[in-house]
Amino acid sequence: MGDTLQILLAMVIYMAAVIAIGVVFAKRANASSDAYFLGGRSLGPWVTAMSAEASDMSGWLLMGLPGVAYWCGISDAAWTAIGLALGTYVNWLIVSKRLRRYSEKAGNAITLPEFFSNRFHEKTKVIMTIAAVFILIFFTIYAASCLVTCGKLFSTLFGLPYVPMMIVGAVFVLLYTLLGGFLAESASDFMQAIVMVVALSVVLVLGCAAAGGLGAVIENAKSIPGFFDFFGIATPVTVDGVQQAVNGQPQFGEAGSYGLLSIVSTLAWGLGYFGMPQVLLRFMAIRDEKELTRSRRIATVWVVISLSAAVLIGVMGRCLFPTGLTTASEAENVFILLSTNLLPPLLAGFVMAGILAATISSSDSYLLIAASAFAKNLYQGLFRKSASDDQVLKISRLTLLAIAVIAMVIAADEDSVIFTIVSFAWAGFGATFGPLMLLSLFWKRTTRTGAVAGMIAGGSMVFIWKLLIRPMGGILDIYELLPAFLISCACIVVVSLLTLAPSDQIQEEFEAVRQGKA
Image (cartoon, rainbow, N blue to C red; front, side, top):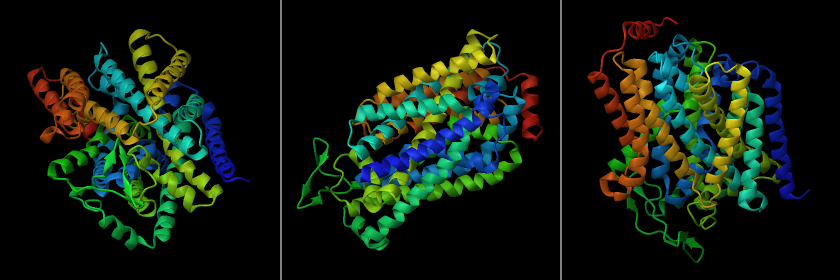
């Protein structure tokens, strides 16, 4: 059997297992919109933790992050990983239990926009509408990054054109999401989280062995200016975006500086967790808030292992295949390159399923949450309040189709860099919802007007900083999440203090949640 056919066979087996999970959970998922969108708050601690992290990390963990490390060294990738690990732990530590309790207290909210709206006892649903619109925008961009991953994976493996392969991946993800809903998504994400961490670990161990040990990998990295430096960054010598090579050796210029501002900017990735719907929903869906302590430990261990392995795989790839990938976009294929060269074809296929796992586990979350934002929060919450559960489910499926089509259009550019797309959408969610989530849970004085101001300011500033301010360079060249997050916080606090305090009923509800009363 040919190598390509063996890889394909392994991936088909994996995809069949994922579809089987969808079939098993389809009946329960379609019982009601509550079951479809939140699983009836029935998740256990292991599924909660693993599905949250798998849906969060997406294909960029196996392609985007190693690609950054391969292209310019450890600084950018490692500081990003440190920020994400810290953000993961703090989010589980301070947000998870209170959000689980508060979302049930606030009208048994099953979506993030619904929680914010119920938290402030809205009648006109302004917060719900704004939140749903931002979710639709940023999750469509996020879904596009997943489709880029699918396209690059299938195109690289099978030597077929990128766009048709991207569309094949999109169709599979869409069919799966339509079938099973939140329960199927969470159950399969648990399996996919295991596949992802095993795939990363296997490739890392085999790669180190092939390179002559971890010491040899590190020595090679140190020989490249700025490549193995936490406070510097490697600068590939490129012509029209393609790295130059002389006598089989990749060319690098002098090491660039990676100063305190760059480090703080990169660590700011961790702030994104406080506003990430796919993670926050898992907090809301666990069956008992007491089990969140165990979930936190599981999630933190998984994240530290996975992120560390991903960064090291990029460094190791530069040692084993120094000129194998010559553009920033191609560098994101380093995990595929290592897997197909270090493993027998059948095993390589199962490891490639790790990338597919990461992509599916994220894109189904993104599509489902975006669809719920429109169907549950806009269609039923705003336009047709008398809509039945069946009508809401039907509209959500039509919304899934529309979002998938738009995401495919965005993903059509073969030269897209996954890391760049993800970083923008991550900043969007972190700045739009992160400050509001923290202040809604922990500051009784937060007002509805302040919430609206904070969401609009945070979400808008991500676009303004990314497109208009950051290109100016200098001290303004920082990751857009940090300034947008701070501006959103400031807007919520200032506007809340300038407007009337929340009603006694809202404050009493807040106090009940703070004191641990469901």
